[in-house]
Length: 313
Ligand code: BMA
Image (cartoon, rainbow, N blue to C red):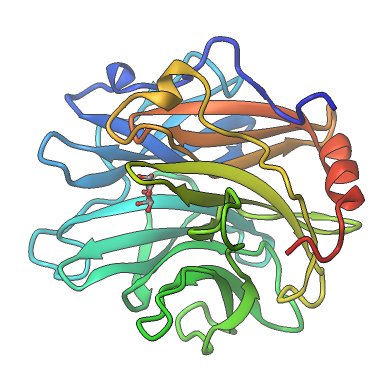
């Protein structure tokens, strides 16, 4: 079978060298199409090791990036919730709010926590701060309410079970969230996604279900490999995984994915779909160092995931 996604031939599409100020690494971006341009909200790790989030815009989503000269969201040295950085944003346009919800990780001495912020223009933000306490990360909001509630997929780590699976919580106001309900578990044994999983970009609504890209981790004696996979969640009952592709869709292969600050990592956090061409783009962090782009077609991808066994989870 031909691969479902193909890397951009000029990848990586963004690196630290594209930045207007000195930084260590740029990776794990949220993605959206806003005012006809592709907007990436990029995790930027500075030369102390602390991350902030900065906007990069491009007309074609591949080249000619214009990068803001200051962060949209920054760590606050006096805030224990995020003094160690803000990381790994996912972007969701919510029509009823006429705004994008940014779901990101706040990092401080008590661990990573899920935070939200709102923006209408990627120039100003309303920061709601931490909405789910540590340890919790990898959050992505569905673009519409389900049964009257906003739904946030996220990845709490249970201290009792030490598991790192995908759960969801519900809210009517984006501020207070219900206790997590389980969605999808890491597989077991030798599987590519057996050690930890986390939801990637905002899932896309299709007639067959919410199409979601997630990352999975495999550990060996001396390394971890981060790969990307696909699942479909029930539209009206998103705790139900209706399909889960057994094979990964993207695995570290390109030189910039195999080597970098954290070798062997593809970490998908942004996804855009062009309805006119059916092109599906996945933006991902490569080796925690640069940004890669993988391109497929939504109809083909959906066909492949639909053909998977329903209980491959
Ligand atoms: C995860 C997150 C990501 C990172 C990945 C690979 O746990 O911390 O920010 O890209 O590990 O290092």
